[in-house]
Amino acid sequence: MPETNYPYGHGGDQDRPGGGLPDHEPTPPGYGEAPFSPSPSGGAFGSIPPGTASGPSFDSAAPPTSPTSASSAAPAPWAASATSGPAAPTGAQGTQVSQGAQMLSAAQAVATLRKVGIGNPLPTFAVGALAYIVALGAALLVIISGILAALTADTGDLTGGGTVPTDGSTSPAGDGGWQAIVGLVGIPFQLVSLASFGSYDAELNLGFFGNAAMSLRGLPLLITVAMVATAFVVGRLVQRRWGSNGVLGALLWSGISGLAVAIFAVIATRVTALTIEDDTLGLSLSMHSAGVDMFFGTWVLIALPLFLGHVAGLEKPAWWPVIADLAAAPRLALVHALVFAVPVWILMAVVVSIGMVVQGDGGTVLSMFLAVPIWGLTGLALLPGLGMLTVPMHMNSRGAVEDFGGARGNEFLWFFELPWYLWIPLVLIALLMPAVVAVLWNRDRRIGKGNVLAQVVSWAALPLAYFGWSLILLALVRISLQMQMGMVGDLGMTVGLAPWMPVVAFFIGLMVEALARFGAPFVDRFVPGPLVNWFRRSARRRRADGTPGTGQTAPGQTAPGQAAPGQVPPMQGPPMQASSAQVPPAPRFPGA
Image (tube, rainbow, N blue to C red):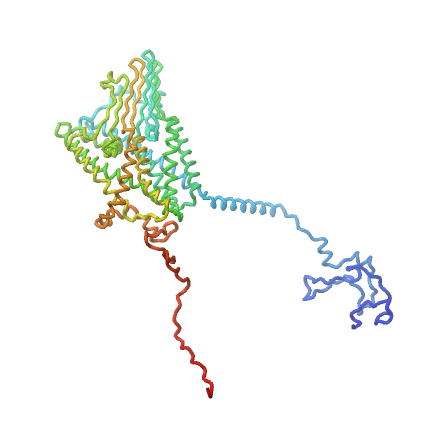
């Protein structure tokens, strides 16, 4: 081996080259020689920093350093690794780091909430407030119609109606005047409360003559429908355009939005109550509709349609076709009620108006039509019950009604008790409508074959929808009046539909389902498309677009890329093409 491989020699071996040099005691690494370590500024093999002892050199006459001096002056890379460490952040850097950590944690929280379907709540809150504002606008329309109807009563003239008596003291200088003004301003709030299943309560203290109390329940349906329709339609629009919520987020934010509106409604209704007090006469009057019933009614009428609107605007999942009839059935029941009630309502309004003119009561016709916002939708909601032909109107009066010109009784008004020129068209339309809506229900309907759940849902959807709508009608069209008077006694009156209406509606829904399955297919080909294609338009569009949850194929067909039962699945990948190259001929060997 070359002697250059032994720069220090071997003092104990005189036969080897360099053995005559003085002996050196063996030293640990780092004392007599520096280990190989690349320098930050060195080349491929590194370099030793200047001034660092690294043992003897043949180009220098300086003696080798001692272990003590070597240990006191370690090579630069070792010294740097021994003294280097993470620098403590300054105040500004620490603030930035903490802000960055907070932003990161907030982003992670938002991402986690989005994964479970909880997104931005502000659009949902805005829709809830908008629904209540629209209800207040409908209440103003009801007030205006009532004033116009009162002015034209018995005269038919908007300017020649009744007059308001006054004693000249109309200045609101006293406290009673301001209270009356606040009560008048609060009438829209009271009507919205009444339309939210509230009761308009009046308490009258007559001093020596005793006390009187009155409670009126009856929904101004124009206000109720305006509030519910706004919450549903705008909620669906918001979900489709800017929605970032899933089912859980829609349920959470819709409930909170309805709760906030209900709290505001209770406060506003109670503050704007009509209160009149006269200490000289011992008279006090308080009228308002704030209560627990209207609180929960407002909460439900805002939150439930808002939640359903969000769900209607969501992208449908893959299993949606299995339960699609559950969403379509309530719409068909509503269509059935409207296509029957609207023609009958128009016919009855025209016939009654003509009869009033013939009898000389034409002056009240204008007043009746001006009051349509008050009674129109209530009368329209009563007609579907009569159209079932086995559900009459129920009128109940009890107590001291004789003192007010009435009579006690528990009566039912059937359709055949109407004039013949009204009940004959009513019966004909009522018998025709189930066949009409059955054709509408059958067009473009898809029922999964071989799926037990889909079969059960397809049979149960319509009966359950008719049953549910009948329960809603029973609650909406019920009008009740309760009075308690100390000197006269108690009395009560109730008007509504017969309580067995939901049972009848259930079997009507079952009948429509049977007609749609076994009768509508024979006449479907003769029905023009524009008359029926609008009902399942969204489902047909989803099937055409191939969006998730709507890729169900018609019975007897197979989806693209899938094999029918008993067939070989198609090959995947690009189709094979025949090559145009000729097959080379077999080689020829000479002499063969």
